Amino acid sequence: MTDPITRPQLEKRKPRRRFGVGIGAFGLFIFLLAAEPGLFGLFRSETIGSVQITIFTFGLGLLVLGGSLALGALWPAGVRTITADLGLRIAWTGYVIALASAMADVIGLGTRPLVSSVPFFGYWQERGVLVGEVVIILGFLMMIPYKLPAAPPDPAPAEKVEVVTD
Image 1 (cartoon, one colour):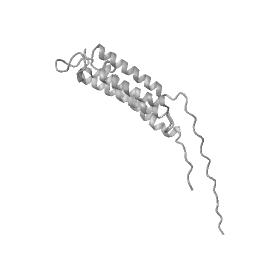
Image 2: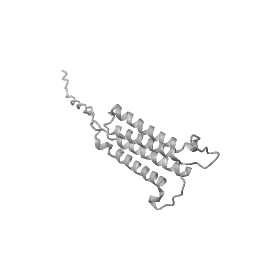
Image 3: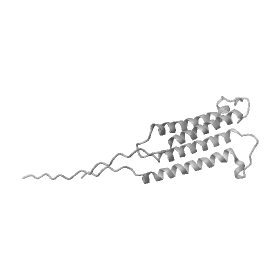
Image 4: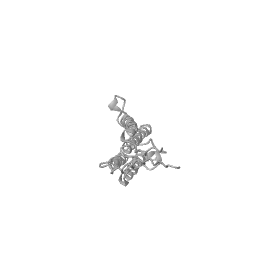
């Protein structure tokens, strides 16, 4: 009469993992395209402008999104440790650090205010983005399920009880 409760299997999360890896790979491509256009045979100017900064921070955001989806799909549904939840938040905090550091001149926190000059991606912005990327990596390392929690035992199927009435 009632169907037994089934746990979602790892195979059912495979498309989510693949989608996460695909988004992450596309984000890495966009990030590298904006950060090092010379790798793809494109013209590289001497300075990094606001458009280039915006594009590589967008690529980094896609990279974090894809990694979060792919690593989150490694955990059984509804069962994730506090460390993994904290790792997700730390990874996104690293992205915010990298974004704020990269856009420092654009939002008025940098050494050169936007009003007086062209946005400048300098020494401190570079170091801030690197710190943000290290924080992202630490968050991802915390999200990896090194040892999956023990699965709860499957409930025994209900026995059929026939009621006989006279």
